[in-house]
Image (spheres, rainbow, N blue to C red):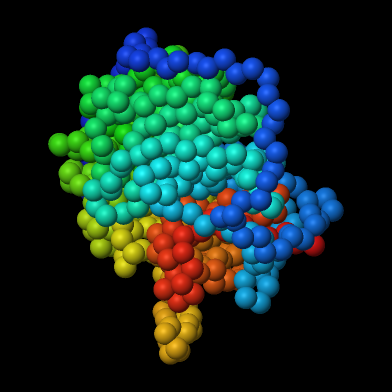
Length: 501
């Protein structure tokens, strides 16, 4: 039965059920030059003066399952890690710091493959693409490129998207649309282009954000050109557009494209919608092989200054999308003919103050045993953690995790009331690792009976902790994106030891 909890949602439901099949053969306006890379010796490790090494991590426990984290949201693209034998409890004072990198501006998270970690940040008028050893922080190579970006709302002017790493190359997308393929072992440029310039993309509210999705030999990007395309696939070895697809007026969102297998077929879901007046956007389901669009489902706030930022949540043949700015959430079931059927919708609490509402701003929810766990709310003060029954579209419980924390600020002891606010979740080792927006790390037991905190550690006290934790080989990587007023530490990428016994 269709359950609709707002007239706005009802209007969206009935305008979103058409099949479009919209795609086109790629007409690449400016294919990049491909450099011929002759065989070369891999870069060797060297000390890096921006890295402070603290101590070696514990050895990996016998029988521990480990994995790479080669792209945003990890190896399975949904914030779920297969790693095992991690710490059950944090040591006194929090997890041990292995190393830290002093960084500039940005909100990106690192990506890791094998012995390579790649991380982008901005220093002055340059973006630095760092390639480091994940366990020591020593440097392999660094790639720099100029940037003139200035955030329209005073936030960081650094990169947002994570790198994508395959066996040979690393793919980097900058905040102004700079797109690079770099050789992983040397940092040499295979190809480079600027998709914003090439496809006529104007500066969005917060710049180019979504991480490209690598499917086979193609990089799929929510381009969002003013005159199209909405989505494009680029050959990973040439950088040339292979196909383009989608509505011309659906601009780039802040949510990364995600892969899925629907009715046994490969599909990609893109939640589009950027700076447009009137605001437009929504969910696209498309075939990554051809770019053929199965359906476009409008889902976007009617408010001009609004964003689609949460990646789609894919469970079997169903997909859940959510947004704040008086938008809400919807669960769609993809039918065998690849048309969408609306299972339920929920209003945003900004639109309706009832408890049975859901509007997720940007963080990826966790799904476990038919229940969804997420941080509901657009702003820091109205953020809550919720458990939602996915089959019914009903909130099971809602809470605001809070605790008291004592700090010494300018020689005076002060007690602070802290919260996770709009946190991030990673499911790992039969639990959830939660990173609060102000720099607190928690182990949680996710269950429909109620909120249960297993342990908590204070890492730092700094705003804009928006990148989710990255876990690889028993180590966790956290981005501190603002100064800590208590300890006076500046922006850092920090590697912590999470290896158990």
